[in-house]
Image (cartoon, rainbow, N blue to C red; front, side):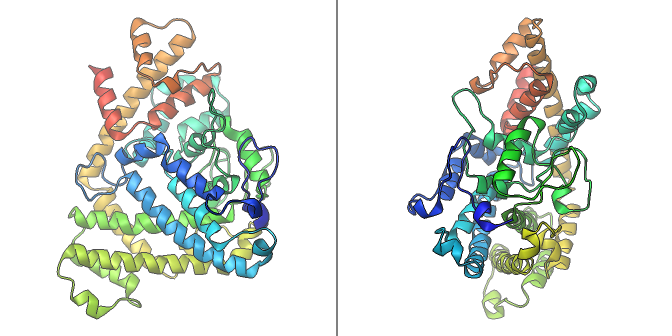
Length: 444
């Protein structure tokens, strides 16, 4: 892979190339992407989607929205630091093509901003609930009518693939959805493969999948335009990662490790003594002990350590990326950056404590259980109504139910797979609160 291709400003539908040297620096294409994402209704809905504590009404717990904004800030810093070194290493990128160090930060920030845009309500349990509706619920009845890959898309419903669909799928009058630059879409693709074969290797990019069968053609177009390396998977589609996807992943890893932990502390799920012990291990080389001793509240102490920890992890991610940049460009680096971090042991300790005290806390489990029931019920009601309507046997109830669908979801889908995916997509874009409200209405 080469950076000139990887930094493509092309957008869906473009006939020619967009050259960086011709860009208006006051309205750079990668920054336009950021604006398009932040003004989208799908992004706004993240304000009422779970990050750690589902349906939490406390004012200091992160939602998907605040998490995504924080990840984008961290990603921008990592991207700029990496970009500065890449431009120094390959001066022609600036001298001939006009790229700047901050372009890297803008690409990574935009991709980070969108990284959770396809996640269903109720956190990762929402993805599992959709998958299990098909694998063990009433959705099993459709398996014989679908290809293996279409079926795998549903039983392993994936927020990353759904996010790619949100960002790129056309509807009448809206071609290519947000029409983001290919560079940002490439950085967004953490798992550039289809749903089968499942986890063919231990390569970090094979851990999940990144697009639905309905989006396969455009996915390949983007990857080929960027010069991403095709994997040898026979008839199956898979690519080595866009290098900047490693930076997006690192920004997310840093934020959920440290900030979810901070939420757990503020909720009282992790004791301050434990928290301080774990965080100090991350910052022992950079902490200003005199300053720390002047902080009198738990909130201030935790905030100070959190800021130092994130700063250390940003610098470490940059160091790991630059040390492996040539292997990454050759598609030969198969780990996350945090896997190779000098702080890996400390991060693993924090994650282990978070799993035990936060992710498996009674409050989280109880609300995830509610989420399972809500999503299962909504899928069953809407899929039945949508299919009955297509087959010309809709009941009055079915017709009334379909009137609830937002106007943009009133689309005719000839193919069963696309009908099922269409309703999954609709349910996935609901906020936690809207899903709860809608479930009460259809269950009354």
